[in-house]
Length: 189
Length: 256
Image: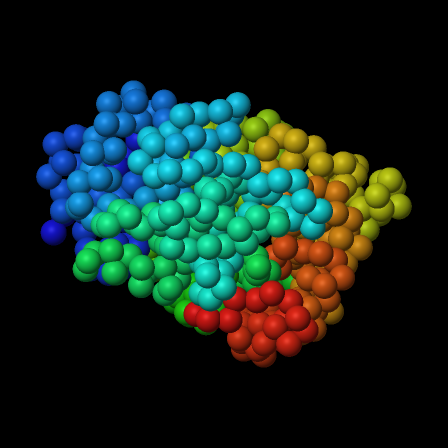
């Protein structure tokens, strides 16, 4: 099985690689379109700002390919900014159009007394298991939301699924055993 | 609800975890990778690893050690010591760390915070500060550097605010007065900084009993806290501390 981790210079992929390696699965960090298209599974990570991530994706000529792969029915996993970019639009940096694969908008957490921004740390998904989050922006609840989390007075999308497209706002690769379990499910789905 | 993070700290010296009081009387505690795995499995919410002799020996951080630790755990990892430029930060991030802690370097070259935040995102840049109680500064605390050896005359609260303006994504407040005492965190400066900045504040120095963690979260509004000696010696486990936190009504991650 080949897993392609899409490299578009939006954050580092070492922890994602390490997490797959601990499951005995070798993944490849790449921006080669052919390799990504032929891979059995595709991981779309991302940390940082939406605007520069979208610009990098266009610069690598990968925006259409990511859209295609996410809708191909092949197992596809978006993580953190890699989840947000799948939505329609983000209000980050004065407004950025995203890949528009999933309906909904990405917004900034409102300044709320008692809450620091970014949200950094472990928070519950659907009131149950804790996963590790690092983010200042969030995706609204939509028709494909499968996980909900609360912060700064907002209930946001922490997990989505549309067929074989899975995406998480949190970092499964840094969420200990609970996170590795999700990656294992992705590898075996 | 976002939980309060409990963060074990490993001080590494020549490839081994050590513990000393105020940088003296260092005792060998074990292998960093083995201890990182044990703490990660035992419920640590994050791990901090400092290469404590890198700066004094004027060498870069032990990248091999960082790489091995990062491969072995799947929780957030912050590292510090021996970072002197953005290229050093990049090496640490590529080795698998999520966060880079800068302390004396940031005092000498504050722009390193902005440069690091621009290159990797502010969530990667942690400002470590070592304040000591001092009537000379308006907030009552002065910043020290180089392992408490040098006094800078800088006001701790002003420095915290400035670092956040420059791009620090998190601040570790390591009290010189409390460090190594195991008599509890320095609540006054922790609370003052936590309430003054919009980024998470990590309390450090002085943890000796589970009640100390309860107090620093409940009364000083810390977002996270560092523990070292009290767990390294085996006096308490992470679960012992987390049970006390949960029983006191503090949001705590209990399943791991």
